[in-house]
Image (cartoon, rainbow, N blue to C red; front, side, top):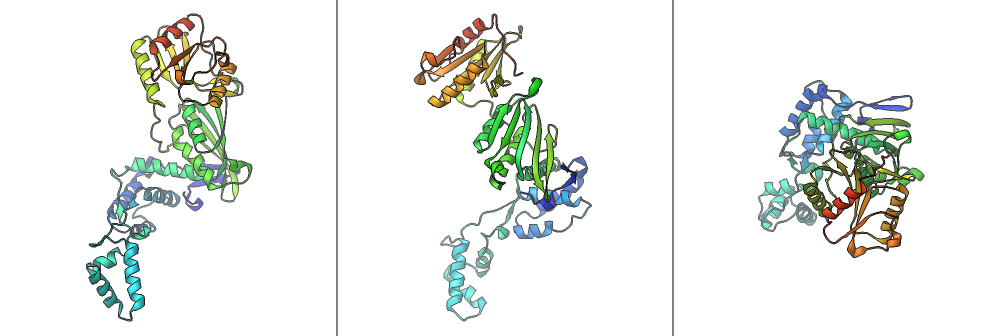
Length: 399
């Protein structure tokens, strides 16, 4: 995490404004990257000592400090390799040398020569490897390929924004499109996530916080909050507001679509091979239908239902139906899923349930078509139900 002293930001009243790196910073970033590349193979402490000094060009102080710390994460230290015929680690070499020094009154040079001879090592190799496992003594390995100045700016901006979020006890995110992966990641990281549709047709709103918000702030949940940020880049639109402790006060920070931050790896298009096969089979069988993976959520009481698929007729867009696939499940999970489907009151929805875990007919929402499957969802059967349902019904929107 970047220290507060290195964050390029301005505090005005109760708001914090982040000074992101942009195209105007690429010239000095190019110089910084060249300095990093020049120290490949040398000790990390030597690189750190060089980067603590000014660059041979003008660079904004806080931006340079933030970029230096962010990029040093990419120039990692090589692990120390065993040396000598006995394959000794640096800690074992130190034990041998310091043990011999404690038992002898000979000059240091003589002790080093004696231990090196006993281990069948040149004296220079012994001293070179003695502290090779310490972070500052490890040899620098450059990333392959090295980042461009543009990528370096985006990575630095992400590190700046994450450092702010790691000091936030509560984050509110308004998301349009791609809500489900964000909710899944938030819950996976142990965060408290409340999802509700926005008033008057506004985009879905996520209230995200950790248990720390109820008691006190800790970096454990701060890190979890910060991990969400690069994944928001894959949403159609987002607006994030955080209350963060910065330089002795609580300030509001805003991040939104278009901010120049480095994105996470793209989310997986499917949760399982089962869903991937179903989408492929359906696309082949129904050329007149668009198969949309994880469409917009549907309101179900005070929460939202995240359908697996939406089928929309290309020539008659009013013909739309949702498809929900329930594979591995527990009784509690299925009960909660069905309760939400009842609340959503969907007129055009097909539920596919693993036949190995079938539930009682009384547990299903009245009139909801159910297609059992084993290992593979029958796309033709789903298409027949969708054709029947959409002859006179449409799917409600999230509003």
